[in-house]
Image (cartoon, rainbow, N blue to C red; front, side, top):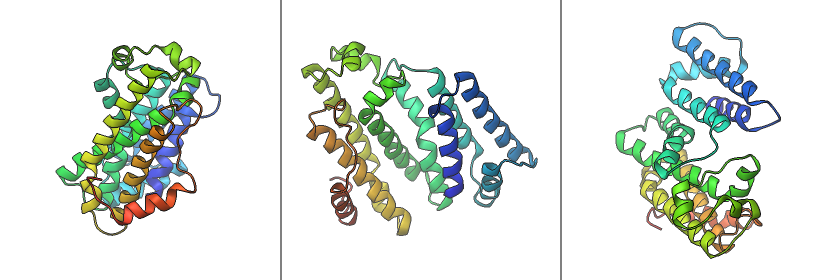
Length: 250
């Protein structure tokens, strides 16, 4: 898990952090692609992230395509800043979030077809939740993950995001997105109920935490501009209690 995290965290930072020019961000992600090619071809590496990752790929049969999917999504964050419709956004989630769940299920030898499908729903939901809580943060980076078709449907333009305008149209838009993410999370939640041991306990807490953030978006009446909904000290007992008494339909 630590080796996978080191890969994903460092690659995501190339796309998002610091003041690198887009060309340099893409070049660093391309260097990671070459390291994956080296693993596939059995060539050696001196890169610390890949020295750590290589033996885990072999020991657990981790599909290299899942790592490549993550790099594709991170590269997309450098070059693509708008999404026309929900299908386009979900294609991004398929590569930016779903591979992590699939890799973890592979580690625990729990990657059956139904488990993978449910994992994808949980991971994509978590990605959407992150987008909805970070509307203002993403705007500062020049990105809008809210699909253009939804903005038009609810009568919201980008000026509303720029101004932090939380009017009735914005609240209706965000209520729709919150419920969409919640339904997706509940669809995947039976996976958390069915997995045993540590992975099951941790996944139940993750699901409960994601659902709690959606509740907090609702508590602030969808005004994510002035109060970014995050899990605070008082939320964790509630999340852990729900994880212990987990019901996938709650």
